[in-house]
Image (cartoon, rainbow over all chains, first blue to last red; front, side, top):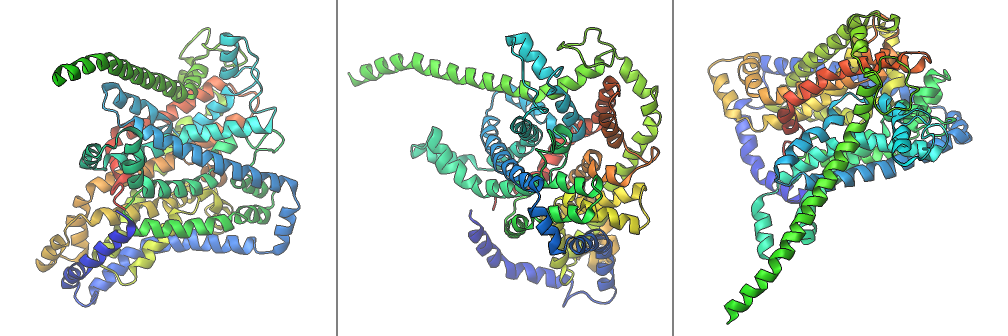
Length: 307
Length: 296
């Protein structure tokens, strides 16, 4: 069902719905009821004002000077960070989401061991991020990490220093760690999406001769497309704000070459003690963020997808 | 005649069909093995380092030469100076988790009741504000948040972290509660109102009990969020007594001569509660995460 048909359905059912609502709180809330309703909303409004509006306004004020941005754009470290962020988002998000899409199909299998496998597979999501990223950090050590030890024991290959020598190896390791941590989550979401597709559709499609790949391209994907799009957009924003993967796996190294905007901002603010520059670094992602947020807010409001 | 022909054909086809099915099964098993190795390697590494009795990871083994549980005992008995306050810090993590869960559920359910059930005028403004907060990455707000907390006089205070976690957990709570509440008939509220119940009574006696599944899903989410979060705890908590376990872990990482088997043992002990909670409430949580599925 597309969102437009959904809107139409809602418009059709709207009059009766609002009627029943009006019966209850006739002509809007009255007297003490209104006071109650306001009182119920006040705690959240207070949290929102004190911890979202005020920090955002303060951040905008901190990062408003245009000179900060000219400073940023003449800094090679910042420019390299922007490239890293683009690679991180472009490759990381798409690999993760496409892998999740394929694996969710795999987990639809009805064999006895697939269920057990799913329980193991979601483990990275359940384990706190920080310990596992530290573990990955050591695992990838060039001299005594588990990966290189294994490579040596099995093939007598001297593995590279994954995080110490090359920017691309380190960035690749960070992206792989991010995928390791988050692909299970999105697989579970897409799996639930696939499970809610009624079996009759597949039966009908099978009668019409759609099997195998056609089954996926003509039945599954059109029905999953909207969910997949929302998940990808949401994941893009979450990945843009992902601090832990980069900070604990590569720490921005070697030689500050694998920072992303989220970690560089924190570094500027707390290690270089330039909070205004840190805020400016983060705010330079707004041209990407704002359109994403607008599309997402529309999608999340009009469709019943939940994350 | 034709029957014989088709019979002959199927007889020919059957082995090939079986072969293809076996190949598919073999490919599935290969993928499964690959997934298991991929998933478990970092976790295996954690366990391996924690079982090492020497604490130097400068070995070339892929299995510790003398595995022992000593490092776990050291952590539990706070037998190393880095871990002097381990139980206190673990308590801090628990306190933050519990307070975040409780307040997220309270604030979120009150707001969603007012907007969704009482139809507060302009309530959509509040739900839009919540939705907007949900899509702002927490790390982008960290720098001004830190300055603000100093202004509020909450620096190095556990409540600063609790407020931060609430800020980022409540939007999700409002979002889920509002969608879940649609499935509860409004007639129940009406009946209670006609019997003379006040809005508070409707909230306590009707709304909360019927929302139990959503409360469990969101509660688990909030608890895990607070337990997993690092950046805000690192920024806002600086003294040894106010630190939480993740902050201590990261400190280990930055000091050069830290015994890593102790650190990994700490990490494993810290990981056990969320994993247990996750597996206990897995179905509820997944249901909460995907209510509605692909209806869009």
